[in-house]
View 1 (cartoon, one colour):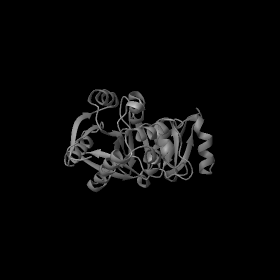
View 2 (cartoon, one colour; view 1 turned 30 degrees about the horizontal axis):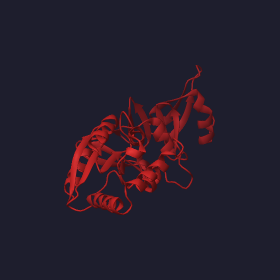
View 3 (cartoon, one colour; view 1 turned 90 degrees about the horizontal axis):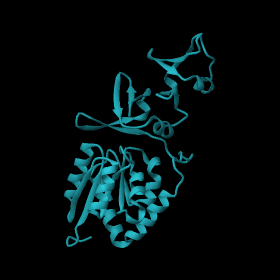
View 4 (tube, helix red, strand yellow; view 1 turned 180 degrees about the horizontal axis):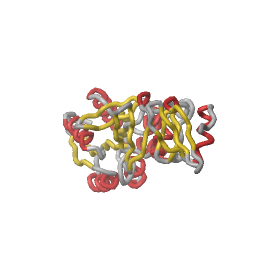
Length: 266
């Protein structure tokens, strides 16, 4: 793309700070013009259809529709080239790296953005939109909810937006995770960090040798469990090393005992 043919950019991300940062970085690129900012998946679909951008920065997880659902809704044949944006670690976006122009892993620095943007320019010039759409089509043909294969990495860190900043929380520091509506709370020592993510997604993307889902609303780090407790009424719970208690689903109790290598204690 040359300056005579501006690159029209659409940004779709539900996090205001993330949208603003992407907009600032894109506006700083020669020949680029941000033509729209979408706050959720549904709005992204409408803007893509109405504005016909040359390039879309598309958040993987958004309310309404996810990034991949946006692609399906628009239709691969009508979808502009995409750079996926995600807070997940590399294993979760391995397919995107193959099928999309590029990806940006939050939090990313300015150099990584420029690298992705330049890759987009070159791909649009050399490969053409049709080839890029073929790659997106191949990605959509993958089985849904595919779990990580053994050679993929599990999550190593999560990005948390707080007080106008993005903080990186290493997964190795998380003691347990609880559900709070459409959000998840990461419990790290005495601190609690809130992210917008489903428990099912987190369960699939955390190392099962390290974390175990003890209840539909709780995932716990196995080495933080001190005791498995049960009462005469058939209710189960665990006591963590810091003394806190978490409820255990009856259907998870037997597997948890096996994972811990201990018997239920009175």
